[in-house]
Length: 140
Image 1 (cartoon, helix red, strand yellow):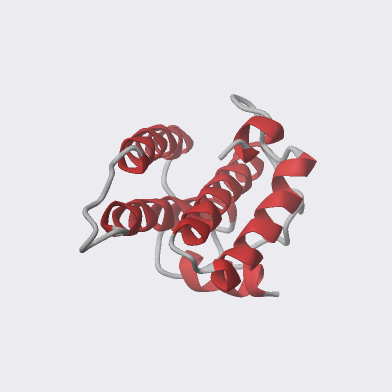
Image 2 (image 1 turned 135 degrees about the vertical axis):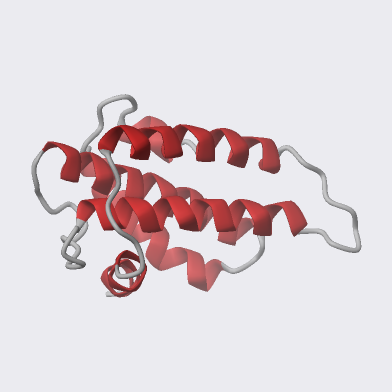
């Protein structure tokens, strides 16, 4: 579906990075995204901080996708793989869930739906959940 099509497009543009670097990217992205979510934008540009947050989350999702599928062939939501691949799929799903929430915030529900559905499938399965569990990741 839309989830795999999006993953193929995003993974094709990036090379995998070290697992520790992906973890650092996760941490910094979630921290910066939380700061952006706290911003109250002016009425003339009501979603400015959400659009900035969206770009950060897309970058994280694309990098995690590249790490999860180094050959550019993503595994399906809930699909298997070993250690760092599983963790990358989990990080990709966290980014997708947060990106879906961002799209809901900006009243783009139809774009949010496939991201949220794909993310839920991975997060509920607990793929790669080492530092946070699926339920915590869903707490958007």
